[in-house]
Length: 176
Image (cartoon, rainbow, N blue to C red; front, side, top):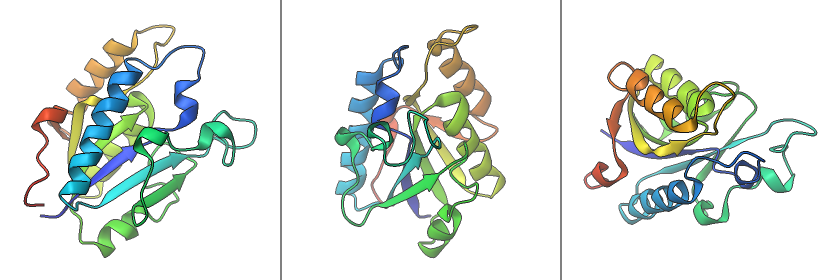
């Protein structure tokens, strides 16, 4: 089995909303730790970057569109630019995974109920084994639910049916 780390939408703009990202500093620390361990194990890393379109906080080329410096890609690491929630929709992500014979995705990032959820479900539907890093995805409080509840709900919903849940400390990069 060949695995890849997939970091979804950890972009500057996600840290500048009026509503703060739930435990944003902790998220960055955990994602950076995963990234460091994946790189040390020479595991492929894919950075996913959302383009919200003209005028959007995450519009391509805007300051918010940039990947966060703490987890910025290094030369040789793939960047998947997308305009939809799923990293697979209208991108060459699947082709890049197939070219490297990758069949398992270790997923972390932002926004739990949108791009993380959509990518997990699409990956499972395409036959990939998915590991969702349960403490390394985040979102914002909504008018109806606090972020912590959204995250817990998605861990429960995605876990088992669409993904295997593992905490960051339980993710192993050896032998992949």
